[in-house]
Image (cartoon, rainbow, N blue to C red):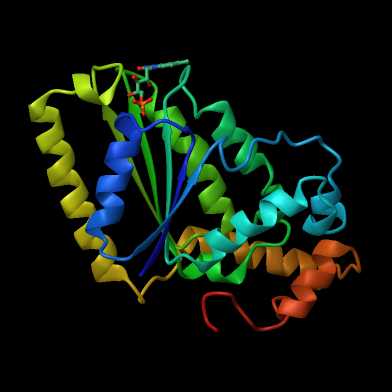
Length: 231
Ligand SMILES: Cc1cc2nc3c(=O)[nH]c(=O)nc-3n(C[C@H](O)[C@H](O)[C@H](O)COP(=O)(O)O)c2cc1C
């Protein structure tokens, strides 16, 4: 099993330890991306990725190897501490670069068979909105199964986290790892994902277009009977 972990921070605090613990329990090959260390660009809003091709993004060269790491993984872990009720700016800037991959545009077919976990830690509040920041992208990328784990650590860093909390993290990550391993190779996207994709299929097959999105859907066979979770 290949696991790619994207951290919305460079430092190894509470969020890192929780995500790393889960990744290790999956007993696979772990690849880590630290933000902003491995990608520090902001979207410039040119929309070249959406209108033309991701290769025309001014940051394409830096982004491409990271895209490859996302695509090669069976399990994606997005982990960010809560910063003012949301993901870190680095995580947001990274996710902004994948607008072209949303189901309304040009989703990557392998996403529909992947599992993903969103992880966040907070001093006390803001986990729900932070998890949603990451889960929104994963869902719109078409990821088959998305889990969320938000933890109020009541601490400003990992060394201040209580032993009781650490035990809780251990139990929760063991349970999550068990679920993920049991589902490996059998992932099917939810009915909601299939329904949304089918709606896109109807729009694109009724109104064919030769723009970047239209051409891609046709090439994939999705304007016909092919579906990304079937092949
Ligand atoms: C800039 C900044 C903003 C933060 N905003 C919140 C917040 O909105 N709610 C909260 O409960 N904790 C907030 N915190 C605390 C962190 O989310 C919390 O300590 C988290 O566990 C840190 O994870 P880390 O050790 O991985 O950095 C904030 C911390 C920083 C540095």
